[in-house]
Image 1 (cartoon, helix red, strand yellow):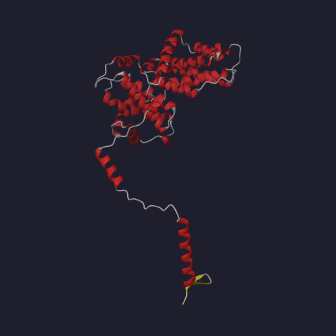
Image 2 (spheres, one colour):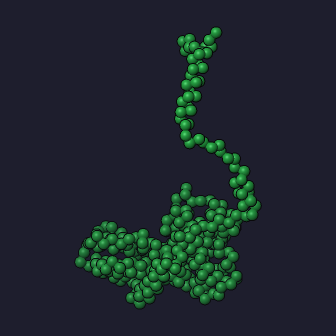
Image 3 (cartoon, helix red, strand yellow):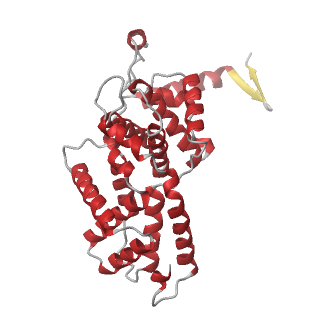
Length: 328
């Protein structure tokens, strides 16, 4: 922290940010997936008994779609991916179980991040995700994941460092016209999360790669100097930063290309049984037709009817005080 204090006195906000940074730097290794387990997935061939990188990446894209569908925060998605990768790096998982595992990780992350009142029921998540498992299956899988991860779900992730680095830069920069777009940075991080390889990167390094690339785009010398001091404070080597920044740059270039199918634009496909489809068709044809409403003369006809009723009432009835009585 002394390197960042050189020539300036930090305010209470900056001091608090660096205390948080030091805390999470100490904890990040604890919540990082086992590299050996991730490497085994990377080398796996694609078959029905082995989990390969493509299946893992597809499942993460499904988690992104679920996050968007329910309107959950980016933190929920990033945490769900972290829980998923930590579990996959520990256990040998068959592809047929991946759907149930993914939904469990999504549900566990939502409980940590989101308000309880907006979290959907297990039945609803199963229905929307179409994961082909029961509520009891989810419960059993949740118990397995919880035990293997020692019930540690609230983790230090790349999003944690992205927010901290972003706040530190804004706290120290003098040119407030140059503002880093945090939403854009979060979207870029989500794109990286969809590639298994970035689960092997330290969260602090991955976050710094995203920020340095964005600052390079903004061509802000002041911000770049601040990030250099943050890099030194975080003890991130130049070689690590350059290696991962090149991979991140390539990933973002691929992601921004028109050929890339983005999870944000992915539509949920509803699959119904033949019986349900037949019932839907029958109910369509059984809907009674409403009588046609005449387009002209409706108002005049109504007026004439009101006048006619008024005349009949006046001719046959009379008021006595507040009582309506029939004449004769």
